[in-house]
Length: 314
Image (spheres, rainbow, N blue to C red):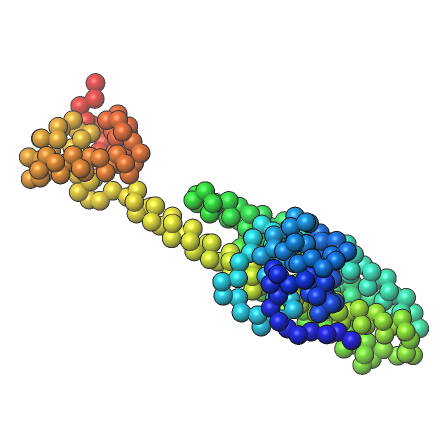
């Protein structure tokens, strides 16, 4: 019988204790690439030996072990979490769902060909839906997040990509359909009770719970962090845009500069001090990253601040 105490594990806890507390955490070890034979080593020691980010491992384990775990200030690596999720997708698509399908086909042989066809067809449709969802995440969402992380790191704007918020909305459908299959078999399967059928039903129950926790990891850990990074990038770009936008006074000074006026002439024309005009000139050059009169002239013409006819260009 499974024993769960729902406590929050720390890096100092023994890995063996973590596994025996909830045997379903065993599946996570392979997805993180952690081998058994952990001895009496701590979670931190085992993670370090296997090249796994300990904070990410604990974030996933604690959420999986207790979905009510508070998420405030939970630290994890987005890159390592994506790798874990990709390995989880491979586990479901390449191993778990195909294995259940084979066991299910064998277990319902005694229920008649029509019932066998209906149940297997339902399961195949479900597996195809899961595959579509996970492949979309692999091919569109995760690359988007990787680009988002890189843009955030460099402070650059992000161009295009698939937002993960949309795909998280599909999780309810994935969770519900497997539960429906269990209900159908339990209520309406006409064959006799067999160990094979009860065993595969148990495997489906476990798979359903595992998928629910997998989706929870995406919804609770991944998506909020993506939104946070997106918001930080947006604010950064807006601030940068404001910093690069010339004020009306600076535009007036720029127009006079490209028309060939000196600082003294501009000051007299605009009723400013020469020092103020010089400050405006420096700000204009710093904002535009242009430091030559010729470059400022091109900028002013391209942005329709002046026309070539206005300038004395020979």
